[in-house]
Image (tube, rainbow, N blue to C red; front, side, top):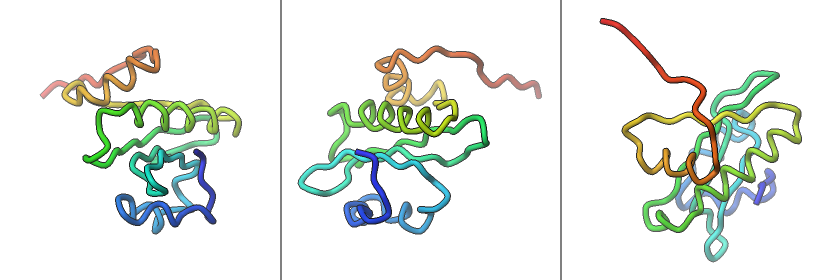
Length: 115
């Protein structure tokens, strides 16, 4: 679900940091278990044209598909706000790459550096 400021009471158990950063991370979507947010997707960075997804799932709730659900709902909210949703991860983060795969996301670039 997309949560509003009034719905933030579901966050403290696993995502208390989101309450402090609330105004800067919109939109925020969560998956709930027994009224407690166990997975969250938020906006750690954005411009007028695009927004980046930040997703976390509490350890006790991992492997249940919550990350896919909250990212998909977040992306819909971002699009409805007139911006392009963006999802980034690292090659080492296989769980995050699985989320991207399940959502059918297409890789458009990767970091490259020379030392």
